[in-house]
Amino acid sequence: MFRKASEVIEECESRGVHIKDLVLEEELKSSQINKDDILFNLTQMFKVMEESATGNLNHETKTAMGMIDGFAKKMNAYSKEGKSITGNFVTEAMAMAFSTLEISAAMGEIVASPTAGSSGILPAILYSLKKREGFSDEKMVDAMLTAIGIGKIIGYYGSFAGAEGGCQAETGSGAAMGAAAACFLYDQSPEVCFHAASFAFLHVLGLVCDPIAGLVEYPCTFRNASGVVNAFISADMAMAGITSIVPFDEVCKAAGEVGSTLPEALRETGIGGIAGTETGRKIRKKFFALGNDSTKENK
Image (tube, rainbow, N blue to C red; front, top):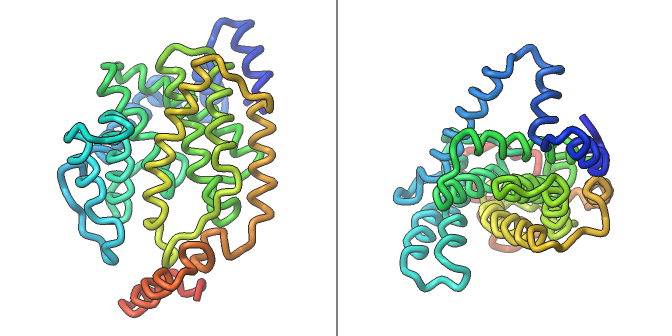
């Protein structure tokens, strides 16, 4: 797979293909799976995404700590009132992001795209646009391949793990992947997709990872919802003709460098940031009191 945005753009232009075609070619070379099976698997993954994005829109999952229960249902109801500042489409998409995170917190089925902590972003983007525009499942699979191509470059230069690179590595990556996928859905060029991905990533450069009690719930769910909005505005800026001076691969390098310099307390340890507030510490103490030993190393 190409490592520089310029190389991808040049290859796509010379051959008359798109990012998704290069990704599929690479997958066929590196795996033992044929094309039909790859596309089938992606279709099944999109179905899981769709189910997680809509599963809690009218339903409230109960989690052990109750920190994010019912957010999707409340936001979805609000989106239908016609009173939102950002508009019904955006608020409904935010509700979809909340839905996936709630289902994930309740140990339901999700697609880590690219991680569980950022799993609400891509499903909300893809399904909300499919619902509004009537895109086919085949088009959604191609959008997923485009997102994968962006993710491959991110992964080459850095990490998707909040424990290594902060929340920028998780929700920043998810937003970048989603922004590129959104541009693809509107038949934009690979260059425009890369500009959108660059904007989405640099918007959250330096974002810390500070989940209360080490649980991927709070403030993670809000960063998924804002990640969806980040992707949408990044796609709109790129489609308007605004360009990123810094190429996407260089943005990824910068994100990797910034992530590696974040203090340990701000990299998913559940110690600093929001997790380190008085309320955050109280919730953490309550969590341990319930007999949950999975994050005792963060004590």
